[in-house]
Length: 80
Image (cartoon, rainbow, N blue to C red; front, side):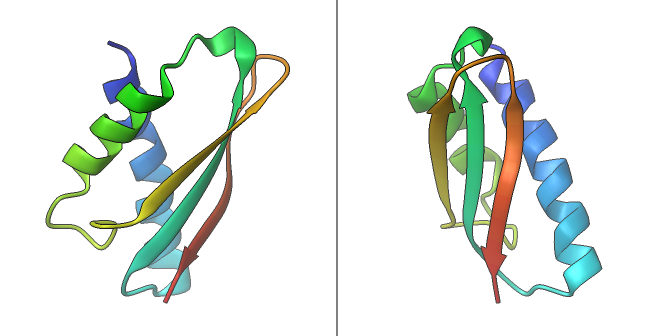
């Protein structure tokens, strides 16, 4: 299950942005996932939710958009 390590890497990016933009809470993380990455959306969502407990990302929605190719992009982070 490589989704857990991918979720951890996504969170590192999100936490960097929380600090850079002085966010108190994250409400949405939009991820673009290439079809060739073989990422299971349910597993990634589960791992993300498990890893965000007790953080500024707890309760945030992770929205996964499938695109052609190998990309894995944190497209957008919304928060307050």
